[in-house]
Length: 72
Length: 216
Image (tube, rainbow over all chains, first blue to last red; front, top):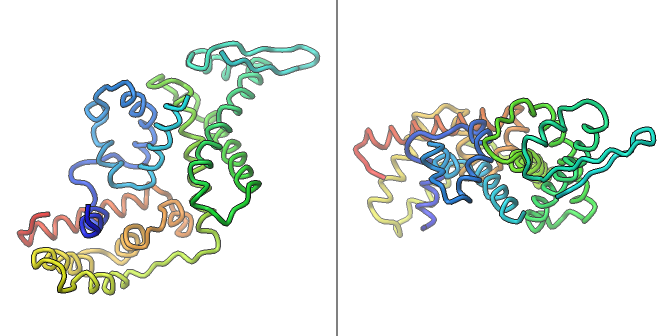
């Protein structure tokens, strides 16, 4: 992705409905386990993927939880 | 199977259940007396491990900190996470394993503490007008005409359809890459409230671009 596309993505955020940060945190553990079970996590928790694309902090939290569970 | 022990008045209590036995975790942590103490001690070890995991992942981004600083941060994060988990244990619904549910509290506390430590002593820029300088750089003759038009309309949108607060938050979070937890602390608000502001600003900008008949 070019720098301009990254900038546009950061400025305009994801398309469509997304969870709030609080809703994201609430559902994060379930989402990660569904992902790791190869289930359709995005269908089970609509709006999560969009929020993870739009919120860098929640994105990092998701990456960390996923990595920690995998390492267990 | 992990086992935790705690000695209470010469009586040794052993918490014996598998880490993935969520019901046993909740029962032990909700029980009165020594069984709860043993389970709490075991939970703390689990949270500390998660906090250290997060600290290790981010260690390279904080080269000015020493080894003791990192361990202090991990311990502080585990302490805070233990309080949060115990306060919310009644809300655990079993949608995931208990350990995965508990981990997220420790990871969150550690991540927030590390982001704040990384910006400690640094001024957080709140300069909505900085967008104008930034946009001018992007409107160089090297870009395509279409890209230039889009950036110009974005500049107009930022200046005309956003409130001052929305401009400040948008510029700080997206152009200056201020972590949202750091900005929330400086503005005495929450991550959720700031993200709502960012979300509303983005929605306005998307509508502005669409009203001009432009596609992204």
